[in-house]
Image 1 (tube, rainbow, N blue to C red):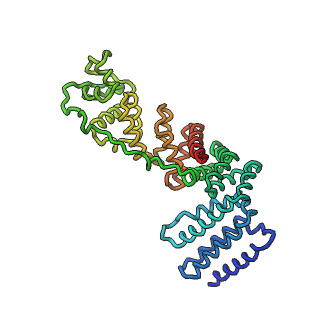
Image 2: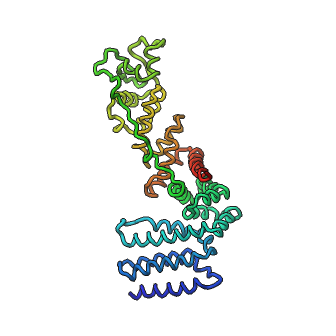
Image 3: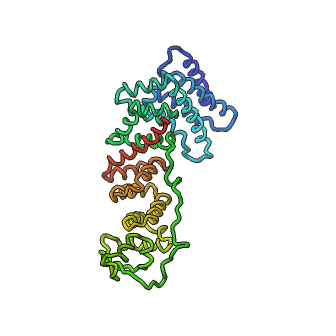
Length: 393
């Protein structure tokens, strides 16, 4: 009880200092404000006094932040990132301490947004981005992403004032702020630009042989494919010519293969061809196939002019197989195959997926380790620019 009374007395003293003119610079320091907010932890008994103190905490911090003179110094520190972190529930949604930190932190962020988007605030931010030192510009851009919600202001600060270039330059380098940059870009993509998770918006496509010609269980006209590894795979010749223009020309056209019962297919894996043929017969093999096989099936079906099958498997991978473990594999395949399928989707997932920071940083480490850093950062920047430019309309 004595501890609580001491905290109350300190807050009363702070309120007195807040009213002084000119403003007292120490009141706007990162450590001082965090100490006030962290004191919330001592008032979690659910009583009226605790609720009263909770609102007094918000009012005290709001009074300090009300002066624009404190905004820039705070935005040049990790203060806003730390406040944003407090909005996350560490223990559970039923945790009283988490709830109170969440409530106070959200109110503080609202106040910071109000000040940053004011005429004085946005003018100071623009000036600092254009004229300020490189040392503080990086942290300032990250802070802007956390607090500026107005689309027009965000567009001007990130594009007209070079904020996006600053944060992308961190991503392209080996700065110790790289994870901070990744976190900031993901906040920008998810909360400010509202980029959708591709898994959530992928259209469910149907594919099968219902109401169409089905392969015969005992086909009369059989073709055997001999692969480079020596494996031989049999298939219904009539069914393949019906499903693919490529096989139609190969097996019934003017090629010598049209009269042969055994045809040599080069650069094809037996596992991939088997999977492709089983999907054609309406078997749920794609649910069991690994990501590498499914990606090979997309490439193979594209080469065999099976557009419906290629679209179906691509859509299935997008909706059901993209995750933090497979994104690097999918992105590398997209580039190296030359198809560029799922390239944008894998980048979008990396930016907006609801996953822990540790998993996200590990995923990005794997992406950058692929050896396509320039392509990756360009893809991220193009995606962000596409959405930012829509703010002009």
